Image 1 (cartoon, one colour):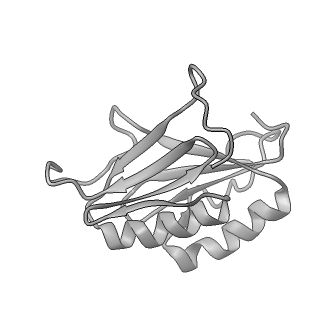
Image 2 (cartoon, one colour):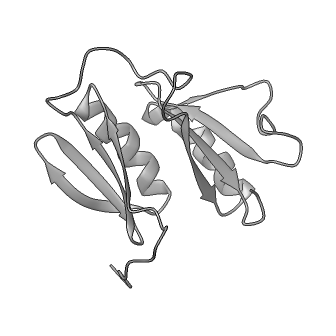
Amino acid sequence: MGDARAVTGVLHHVELWVPDLERADAEWGWLLGELGYVRYQEWAAGRSWRLGTAYIVVERSPDLIPGVHERRRPGLNHLAFHVASREELDTLVARSPLHGWTLMFPTLHPYAGGEQHYAAYLENGDGFEVELVAGPDQT
């Protein structure tokens, strides 16, 4: 996978524990594939997708305790990804419901993050939120 040299501070991986692996595989697999990630690993309890040196894991761990993910509790609120253009972002938003993602803040879209921030906020069936940010100049 290209230049795999370790660079201090660069994200290595993110691991998300999910209650339903098949649903997570479908939802995350579609979105990450659209964002340029490729399937990296697959095992009985998990999957991962890689882009560059970082990868994202969804896993149905045997240590998972009952309950649902709630992004407003302490812990992970959301993952944010760059999208090359507004047009690409709009296409992802239009196609996302077919793959288990729901547009959050629809009355404020695409400026829910502010009038200078063209982005989409999506939530999947397990309550995980992603922010898709259009254009290279967006922060």
